[in-house]
Image (cartoon, rainbow, N blue to C red; front, side):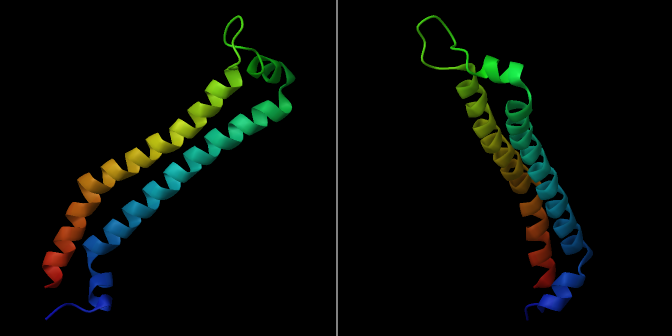
Length: 104
């Protein structure tokens, strides 16, 4: 017979899984917010940086430094997502499997 939801919630491994996922999720969210808002606030309040961001990458180039840094902000979101997925595949999936096995 399968375990009830209450029995699973009382499992120490389940509580550890929930706490670990929550901690990593909040940490990565805060990092992403710091990257995004840091970029926006620097552009808004630092005129010298604003001028630098508008500078072309090279002579005759239409791509600016700001576009490259903006793409870096977007790429950082993919990297942080990758970190979460790697951690989930390496640690959380194993804990989930153990919890399921114990609840059978």
